[in-house]
Amino acid sequence: MFYISNAKQCYLQLNSIKLTEKITEPMSPTRAVLCGYYGMGNAGDEALLVSLLQMLPPGVEPIVLSGNPQATKESYGVASCDRNLLLPC
Image (cartoon, rainbow, N blue to C red; front, side, top):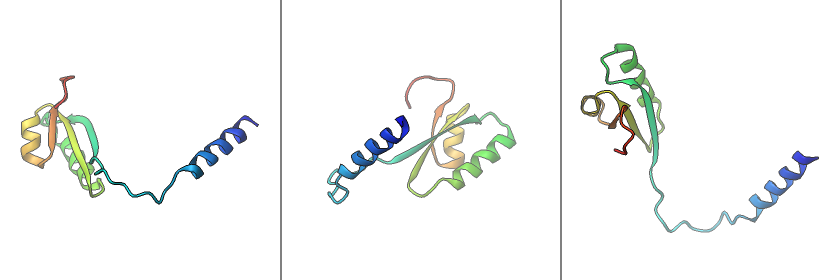
């Protein structure tokens, strides 16, 4: 009974949303953070990164966490950050 009640509440909330309203603010880009052992000179991991980048849908901006962000940026033309830092790019 609990699940049926929650499902009904969810259904009612979704029906109350006006889907016909125009969005006037530009949407922020969709980003995907790719975290792996990239930029460390391992051919297998670099091949995996190439494959992941090819599989991303159009309009998704990849951000790659890398052991060598400058080399990753130059090699793949993507935004890259040092995987060992906890600071923003």
